[in-house]
Image (cartoon, rainbow over all chains, first blue to last red; front, side, top):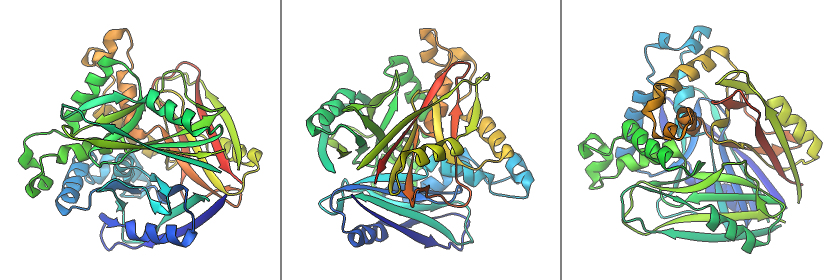
Length: 139
Length: 139
Length: 139
């Protein structure tokens, strides 16, 4: 069994932003030389997500509005977590909705995807350097 | 390390429907001959889910009502994604709540499940042919 | 390829409670002797979660309040599932938000985690014995 590991780094100038990382993950897979197996891609921070959905700007706007409805950023005093001096409780909740990780099949050396599947890094508390882990196991 | 791959196809006559696919997935596992490892089962479409929960009709009704509350189908104009000519923005959000994939342990050639775990395909934008991927790795 | 399996048991005196199980999972990994691979940790019950987030009491209070807002326990009659004699429909919904499982990379014999990642068992229908599965594959 082979294994491969790489960190992808991000530093969004905004509090919230989505990055399409499909190309980065494909380069990891190529570098790994693994042809059959499983790829894990996860946020290494608990105020960020890795998820699979559509690369369509209107939908990303919908996600932003929807997540703000389900877990609003403000008022900061709404959340006990923010009593610790943080202001990012909403980011912990938003990441919970969007998910920490994706697991993708690797077949014939490629991400085994349906027609519109794209991998995104979802930042919910940006303005600093944060990481995503790519781990691949297989043959 | 062995690996196995199969696509399961669905074509719901309804916009939204849940299918219990546990038996289909068990047949995949048997066909694979894998006794110890990991099974990934994921929707290959971004308006559908694979999830694990109870096979109880009342609960499925509760899910339908709850998801409509959290991410209503209508009015279609509520979502920017629908400006592209689609009407399925709500399906992208509902699938986000329910999840894209499940990862299941394989032990002694069986799905290593608790007493009530069943695997479902959740369709949120049906009336066309769509796919689920089953990938198994192990020995 | 090596594989390892263990069940962790819980019996919360409360209906809802979060348990930090990171140490338990680390002990499983050490016991397995696996240095490179993938670890799956999942609730074996469909009214409970395994998730990764922060070990901060204020945040856990925020999760409790937030989940009660999204999927209230009462009135029990609100849910068709509860017509079966159960009172735990809300627990099925809460677990859906928080997730069934986590998949964690194993690198150099350790959980390959970012700075604040901790694994939790989330109980949403306690007062009885319930289980979490830890499955590890790799070399």
